[in-house]
Length: 338
Image (cartoon, rainbow, N blue to C red; front, side):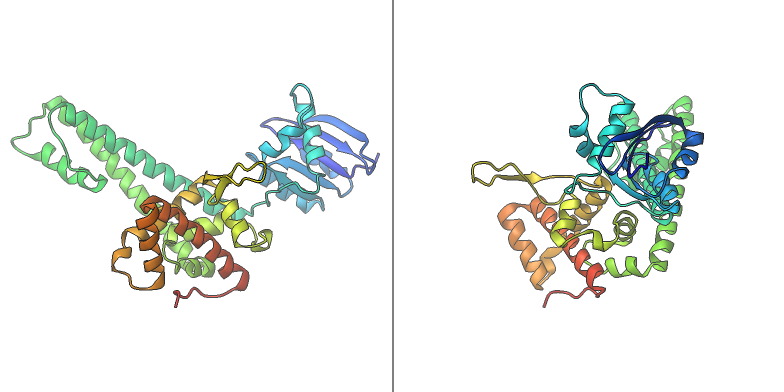
């Protein structure tokens, strides 16, 4: 009856447990509610617990680790091939229990509370920026229907809108002015909240030595540095720099067969927001590389001439990911190429 491996199919309210012994024989197949999950797991001896890396998995992983269990999280895509016949909660738990025992399975490290707090701050900031962009586009679109066109740029909307609303020769009616004043107040509130989020990110960056070390790399600013610390597991999780860049989805997608190697676009696996920050930061370095005479600037210009600015930006993001691995694994400081 001793459970050595336990697969848990987690959900919002109902959890399904599937446990096997050292011979692989099923000895536990049970459905429990959320309030009784910890009580049921606490009854088991220390064992290996497998779960899909989805919402709430990191929280449950930390709870189970305090009980002495070994927690392993997996991407749902890697668990899917082990689901037999039709899908239900019980078969999902059995598939998780089977997948966690595979020797070549790839696992997701359990995040700490601090990492999740930092990630939550960055996610909220990203949401506010998207809301600001949507609101700016809405204002520009509504005013264009009235024959009023603003210059491009989110920072130019508030000054131009003030001229339209407060000007004596404004073409807007009284009803339109009330509508656009509400939109202006909403936009000001979003700008204020984004500025407050930026201040919190700046405080995190200033108080974290690793963030300051990473932000010295060209193309990695305070926001990207905080995102790296919040997202990356321990550096020992990665075998080398290429493993880290592949984990971020910055290496070419491979479709090889018959001895023929076919490489395509980047795989885009891993954390999308972190990959976007690395590429956008690299794009700013590529744009400002014209005045650089160092080896990095020469390499960027040559690559941009041969392959284009976008591919050069992705290549620099790939290089920066490998530099991050070198800095964290060797506990060194970034130095410009000689």
